[in-house]
Amino acid sequence: MSYPSGRHFLQIPGPTNVPERILRAIARPTIDHRGPEFAALGLELLEGVKEVFKTSKRVVIFPSSGSGAWEAALVNTLSPGDRVLMFETGQFATLWCDMARKLGLEVEFVPGDWRRGADPAAAERVLSEDRQRRIKAVGVVHNETSTGVTSRIAEIRKAMDRAGHPALLMVDSISSLASMDYRHDEWGIDVTVGGSQKGLMLPPGLSFNAISDKAMAASKTARMARSYWDWEAMLATNLNGFFPYTPATNLLYGLRESLQMLREEGLENVFARHARHGEATRRAVRAWGLEVLCLEPAEYSGSSTSVLLPAGHNADRLRKLILEQFNMSLGNGLGRLAGKVFRIGHLGDFNDLMLGGTLCGVEMGLAVAGVPHKTGGVAAALEYLTQAAQGALSGAAVGQA
Ligand SMILES: Cc1ncc(COP(=O)(O)O)c(C=O)c1O
Image (cartoon, rainbow, N blue to C red; front, side):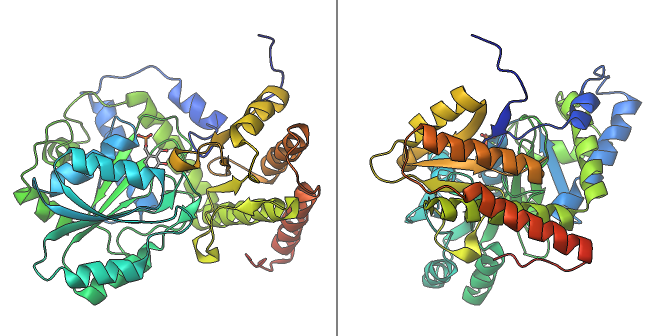
C-alpha cells in the first residue's frame, strides 16, 4: 500500500467530511457524565439542538447510529400489530419498513420506482380509505439517501389533513437535517429521526428523535416493548442535563461546535449552499450526457445526486477506479440500484472548490473507465457556481433551476 498523498475526498452521502473545528472540539478529555460540567453541556445541547429541527418541543439524543432512532420512533409510539403507512422511495425506506415488520407492526408499503418521492395523493387515498383508523402512523424518508430524491413532507402533511386522519407523522431526516429546509413544528411532524454523520458534520454515533406533544401522548399508551430507547427515562434525566446511561460525551462536544458553526453560517444560508451544489452537480451530469436518477425537479436533493450509468457499464467499477486513481470515495448503488448508479454526496462541510474537485474526479474517472460521455460537465458546474458567486456579490439571487 503506497501513501495516497493529499486529502482524501470523502464524497459519499454521509458520513461526511468532519471539519477541523469539530475534530478539535472532540479531542478533549472525557468528563464525568454525572458531574456538573456535563450537566451544563447537556442542558445547553438539548436546548440548542432544537434549532436545527425547528422545534420548540423536545429532542432526545441517543448514542447510536440513525437506525436506533428509527427504532425509538416506532417502539415509543406504537403497539404490537398497529398498522403503519410507508412509501417505497428507496433502500432506506425499505429498511425502515423491514424494521417495523420485524418489530411486529403491519406495514402498508406503497410501491415506488426509486426515482420519485412519497406520493401525497397516494397518502391521501390510503388514509381516506382507512375508515376504521387502523393506521396509527405514517413514516416517510425525507431525503432518500439511496436515490437522491426528496419527498415533499409539507404536502404529505396536507394530504393527511385533507383525509382528516389522526395518524402520527414520522419523518426520517437523517440526510436532510442541517442541509435542506426542514420544519418539525410547522410541518406538523410528530417524530423526526436524525443522525449526526451528515449535515451536522459530526462522525457517526449520535441519533435524534424530535418529539411532538401528540407523539408524547401516544407514548403514554403505546405497548411495544422498549428499554434502551425509552423516551420516558431519557426525558426524565434530560431535565437536569443528564442521560439514563453513558452518553457519547466526546461526540456531544462535537455537537456543540457543530451547532455553533451552523449558527455562524445561518441555517438558511446552509440550505441555499446545499441547493446550489445540488444544481451545479445536476448541470455537470447533464452536460456529461448522463442521467440524474431523480425524475421530479420538485424532488431534487440538495444533499446528494445519484447518477445512472449507461446500460452495460458498472458503476462500482467506475467508483473503484476513481478511488484508486484520484483518492475519492463516491457512494455506491444500494439494493436494486447496485452497480447501476453512483452517488455524489455534496452535503455537510463543503464549498464550491470542493465540489469543483469532486466533479473533476468524476469527469476524469468517466474517461479512465471508458464510460461514454461528453466532456464539459465540470465547466457547466463551474459556470453556474461563478454566476452564483457574481450574484452574491451584486446582491442578486441566482435562480435554482
Ligand atoms: C435516510 C437514511 N435513513 C437511515 C439511515 C440509517 O442510518 P445509520 O446507518 O446511521 O443507522 C441512513 C444512513 O445512511 C440514511 O441515509
